[in-house]
Amino acid sequence: MQRIPMARPTWDDDMRQAALATLDSGQWVKGPEGRAFGEAFATYCGAMGGTPCQSGSVALWGALNLLDIGPGDEVLVPSLTYIATATCVDLVGATPVFVDVEADHWCVDMDALEAARTPNTKAVIAVHLFGQMSDDRLVAWCEANGIAYIEDAAQAHGAVAADGTKAGAVGDVACFSFFPSKNLAVGGEGGMMMTRREDLVARMDALVNHGRDARLEAQKLGSNFRMSEVMASIGRVQLSRLDSWLERRRTIAARYTAAFASTPGLTTPSVRPGTLHAWHQYCVLVDEPEGFRQHLDEQGVDSRVYYATPCHRQGVYSEHPQHHQPFPVTDDIAHRLVAVPVFHAMTDEEVGRVIQAVTSYVCA
Ligand SMILES: Cc1ncc(COP(=O)(O)O)c(C=O)c1O
Image (tube, rainbow, N blue to C red; front, top):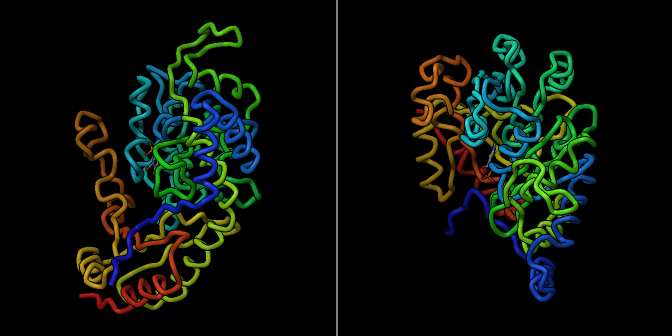
């Protein structure tokens, strides 16, 4: 029996055609595909503009750059996230200040943000973790305190906030990743910066182009962080599929939640009321993660822990003043959040096998 992986990127004739046509055109960089992809995804999200770039990590670095964040500035980040959310802050010379997450929705916690805020706080990077929208009250909180709101939407393509705004159009700048396992991919590495602020649109494009203006003179520091045209052309086709793929992820997640509800030893994820989850990952909170994962493994089902070591405890932050700081929720859940496969190309038979594997687990 074939193992069920955590992700299976899909690739079809339309994407093949788009890639070949772009290669045939001879315009491999700086062409119409990148522009059209940026515009189409920004329109999809309801933002003013989108700039494709080389990865989600580059997009995060770019967001801080656009907002003029640098030495002496503090940026609030959850510790329960992928390391890029935090290290982008160090890369611009600012200081990441780690905060705890919510016990129920696992995104950055509003009370923890307020407690960590200082006169030096310039931005918060809120991660829409696993595809769950961050707290809606963050927009007003950031505005009231003169703090920029950066969305780490690397896992949240197509997630929708309670007021109907899509991920990407909520904060000042949003950052997406198109890593192959993400909800939307480009056939390699890729990312996008997005903004709802008109004043940042042109600067965003310049940033990935050595800060050059229309006369090709560098006005601001930048570099070459452009996405290639082939990838942008694939991304455009993937975008046209995104809503149906999200529908499939949501159907699978609903089946899991119904099926797992009474399985002893695990808690199913809860969705923030009024919002639409993008289900990049379906994580269950497990009492005995090792036994649970071993059981899934024996049934031919892959799983992952997100994130076993919170950012502030990793070696890169061994000198950070918060390296040993306890975070009650993060410490309690980080090693117990186990993701099981959820992706649009899963067959019903595979979904059934995951359900069978999870529900046959007997907690030690
Ligand atoms: C929450 C989060 N932020 C940032 C990134 C970085 O994206 P990339 O791998 O495209 O650099 C990822 C990718 O896994 C992510 O999950």
